[in-house]
Length: 136
Image (cartoon, rainbow, N blue to C red; front, top):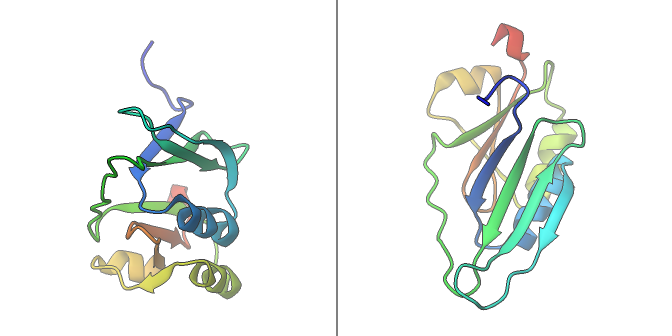
């Protein structure tokens, strides 16, 4: 079997603080918690938080190893882009900021023209693009 357009996509990232990440992605953006697990103290075990939307073919997995944590190392080009097909509501941006996000300017002027970029508590960037995927 090869990947196709309906293959589920998991985006996995390390997180310094799963509580802060959950506030940003769930309380701020509105993703639901799909799964949560606490690891133990054995090597390779970690805390896990999966977030997404029930009808989406993707989800965001955030991990934290309390024994040997991996420090997130995002760059300003590590983007998760959501095409919202319309104006980005001011109250959504305010909610993201109130839940640990920080609005930033993108180095690529395309994202400044066509969206809003918000950095999550781990430094990864979320772009809410005003365009639809079909006209991006």
